[in-house]
Amino acid sequence: MDHHAVAKDWAGELTAVRHDEKTGAHFVIAVHSTRLGPATGGTRAMVYPDVADAVVDARRLAGAMTYKTALAGLPMGGGKSVIALPAPRAELDSATWRRILDVHAANLQLFNGSFWTGPDVGTESADMDVLRRSTDYVFGRSPEAGGPGSSAENTAVGVFAAVRAAAREAGCGELAGLRVLVSGLGAVGSRVAEFAREAGARLMVADIADDRCAPFAEQGARLVPVDEVTTTECDLLVPCATGGLITEQVAETVPCAAIAGAANNILGDDAAAEVLRRRGICYAPDFVTNAGGVIHLVGREILGWSADEVLARVQEIGQTVETIFKTASTQDISTDAAARQLAESNLAAAPPGRVS
Ligand code: PPY
Image (cartoon, rainbow, N blue to C red; front, side):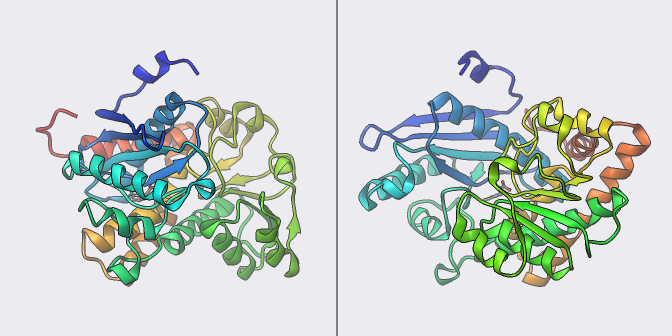
């Protein structure tokens, strides 16, 4: 890891880092932009090779959140929180995890409402219930604690709307009969896989955990080894696991017609988007497709939307993806560039008066 990369190459507003000696955890809160409102983004808790990797990850994910909320039309900015754990969460005893949550809550309280968090990779609603005891700036508590419940369903609805739009754009038409490869069968990926199966797709699934694949295999899905996801021929590739799957090199050869998924940072580097464009592979930018989660949380908890209203807004992701495809083809730019351009114009239209 190039430590200098931590201090530059990021256009965000503020990053805070804290080490807790008692647990060995490092805490990162990256506020990328408050131009449209308080920053928001989930709390990701996992093991990183180095704290610098955690900072880079938080900053990259925070930048994606700025575009995500801007394109979803939410009055919130972009941020992200990362907890670099001393060991995998499953190996931490409950007192250690509790202390980690308490330190995180204290950090959130210091931001005093300029950053709001919620569940992400490695955290869940029950953790938000604990955080909320000592800080207000938390979304996504469990329904028993007065929260809006999991955002997985709405995230999956939005991703599926994007998958369908990408299939049409790629000239594949509707999903019936298409080979749809879903990589990552967590709460969101498994739901997207179910939607695809219900739509008559020829489902293919991959996950590091065999027991997640089994229910799909029993219903006729083809199993794909995780290390063959980017070399297996399919019509639609749906990445719903960790990010960075499509690097420039992978983009050169990946044998699919379209890519749309739930993972953050699907593209592993800046060059990948352009390679996909050149090869005619239709890519739906992740910060558009997976916005259902933040729409669910901010819609229910800040904007007072009903479940039906949230669902209607999430379904609009399909139209946003279509607009981005149109812009990309009219201007002969990558879909990623088109999405960034649209997000930037939404940001520029915000009332001035802040240094951000
Ligand atoms: C994401 O979409 O990656 C998020 O982090 C969404 C989010 C926003 C606010 C709280 C939790 C998750």
